[in-house]
Length: 236
Image 1 (cartoon, helix red, strand yellow):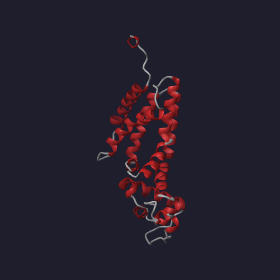
Image 2 (cartoon, rainbow, N blue to C red):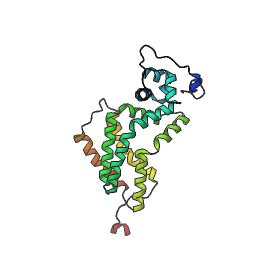
Image 3 (cartoon, one colour):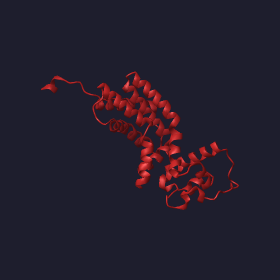
Image 4 (cartoon, rainbow, N blue to C red):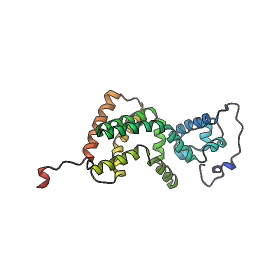
């Protein structure tokens, strides 16, 4: 799993291990959840490459064979950890954003998005460390696999579609919708990362810090992406 060329990548080459005295027999869904929880923690500490299957199995209090049983490759485990941790919350958030978009409240949309990003960094620091490590992977194959899986759908996909729709309506400036969506996400993501992830504490006051930032970010983003009305000076 750690090296595609090593026998450990092949599930058949890993001998099943009986539970040790410290292990507890769990139903498959519980064991899967336990593995994912441990994986997020270890990926967040050691990165994708550094969190070997041996490290992961020890953290999850299970065997490597059991991990392979649930996840054929380490990349599968990484992506499952991301998708199953963020899936339900992301769906709710996207519905909220879609409702605001349908109402034409793009300021409210970007404020809500910013607050959600800050909330995520505060409550899932290990998950965001895990994602940060993924973006820093140096192995080209690993980087491509993870980037493609993490870059499609979700909030990024929603924003790309939203930008394209506003462009068609003549509200947003021309440009690649995907590239513009990345720009719109960059500011709140970077600030949340700096304030919540690279500080000694993840606790950030919602009313005093996050809410004013959300309003400011929404104003800056909309000022940058909206088509400016033509003035008399433009025709001169």
